Image: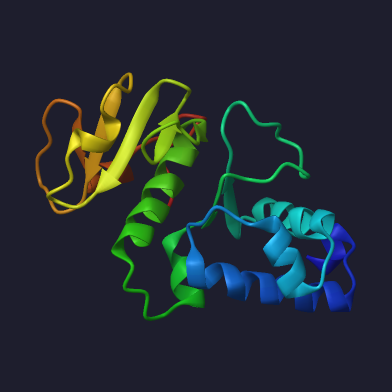
Length: 181
């Protein structure tokens, strides 16, 4: 990152600290002011570093459609780009919700535009409101949302608007090629 984004050694150390902080609480809605204080950095530096980490495919920054795509716009949620990176920072992760959401976001983001919805976990292509959960998850959190989809872990077969999580492995990327995992 130092060569690509022209950051100095001290900034690299701060970026490592930022990743360590994020690894303990992903996915999270970042409090940029608190991160700035904890890391002794300016607000803009924290936002730039988050953007750099997203550009390097280490993090995924989720924003609503209403927000600007600028590096200085605070993301709604921050995720690690995939579950492998999540496990690299937290080998003993027991937060199955975070693991599920990270996997689903990774799969969906290769197939279309994913943003933050008013309710639910993800908004796909500005059309489908998606909630992610385990076998007992219901549509309760998606009540009144258009085109709700429930993605469940632990089921083999889906039904109307319910997809087994394993089927996301068959999604094609935006170019139409099957993803390489």
